[in-house]
Amino acid sequence: MIQVQLPDGTLQEHPDEATALDVAAGIGERLAGATMAAEIDGMVVDAMRPLKQLTDADPVPLKLLTNRDAEALGVMRHSCAHVMARAVMRLFPGVGLAFGPTVANGYYYDFELDEPIREDDFERIEQEMRAIVKEAEPFERFHLGRDEAIEFCGELGQALKVEHIETGLSEHPDLSFYRQGEFVDLCRGPHVPDAGRIKAFKVLSVAGSHWKGDASNGRRLQRLYGTAWFSKKEQAAYLERIEEARRRDHRVLGKQHGLFSITPEVGQGL
Image (cartoon, rainbow, N blue to C red; front, top):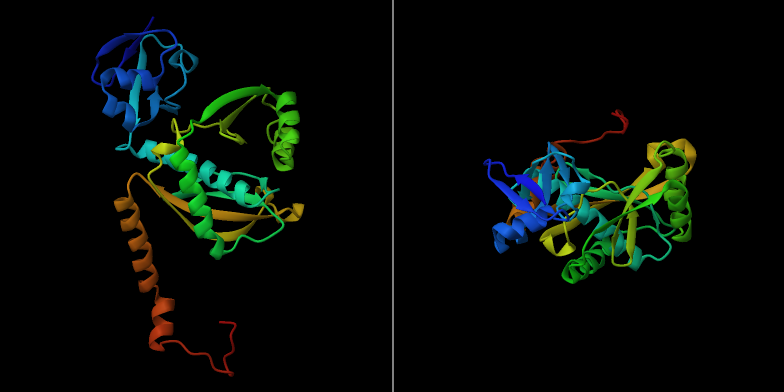
């Protein structure tokens, strides 16, 4: 048995294989459904991993992160980046995966793809994401040794991941992956327990990028940006703020009201 200490000081005993989700379920079904991740000693971790794998502390200082916590929002957005990448892989066969981190108010994923992703594609990407969320498959973490990981990513046809392991992760003998259905990605995590906990998301824009931000390597990528929120209401408010900022943009206002003009004498270089 292991002891768990909750933020209010309450001590609980649980089986050795207990997870943060198990602790949440023991308190209440509603809390378990709202749990996105956990925090142990200030570190945000998966709620579905055995606590004994995460710390040697006794008792385990556990904080459950729910859809009321900012830290959980970041975890959910990271998981949404994986869902978006999975949707893109379904729609664009042969796509190469780069990285998919969270950013302010959302996330992005970089793809290597022969054909361009266009704004017209956003709706069908979102439709595929909704299908994945509805399936509510779990995020499953597993580990491979470095050589196994290189072979595994090679079998998946993910050359960028192979290169990253060989160069950027040369000091790491053991690497973590997350599987969700047919989708597998090299990733440190953490993630939400399952995709069904992602409630509101939107694909926002696409832009060009370079592999590891280095234009000299010649690997041009496509960066797909998205946002995700705990509720559709929060997302709608955010999208309205974006639209309001766009309306207030002085360049947009200037164009609409004829405040700016270009003359041949001055030219277009100012």
